[in-house]
Image 1 (cartoon, rainbow, N blue to C red):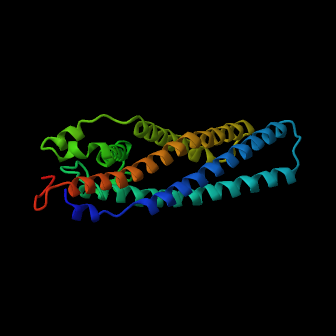
Image 2 (cartoon, rainbow, N blue to C red; image 1 turned 135 degrees about the horizontal axis):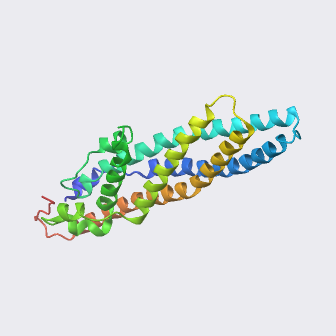
Image 3 (cartoon, rainbow, N blue to C red; image 1 turned 90 degrees about the horizontal axis):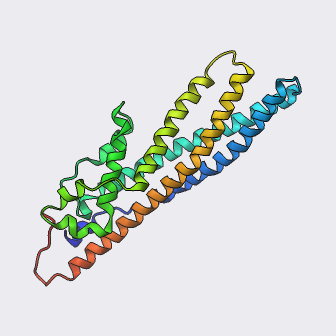
Length: 245
């Protein structure tokens, strides 16, 4: 690895800030959604006994629609921000000493959109980004057997929890969407849907926390790894060449 190649990396700090900012906005809206959802459940309970006015019902519907619209807009922004960050940090791996990588930066984005493969590929790419960004792995990856050793490393707990919560959240979202499009829903069905919405918002809290920690950890690691490689290169005797193969 040369200092010139390290200089070719593009820091992902800006992308990380946008991603984490939108994730925090998601967290705030989830908290608001929980409160609103509980209010809707209480209203539906009273509706079963005829204790709800049309004005109350209309106000509840307007509030729920507003929150849902804001959540959808923030969700779209978060998806774009996260994917641009994910693509960038993977694209930095070769300049950070990553050799014989199993995936390409394109998979950091495309892996989310290929049916069935999207159940595992983003997780696999994230695991590669994690191990390729870890500053403690510079010397390991520089060795002749470095790539094979790196590719045999296990799954970090943070990556595992991030992906598990992402899959559960996605599965729950599909159920909610199907239920939401059902026609002529009974009060019991509306209460069940409201309960699922509250549970989904609750699930967003640990999911967002895991995602923020993951983005922050990898972004910081890449800066430290680049610094570590620069320090190693600066210690080399004048005229010598240090490469990663």
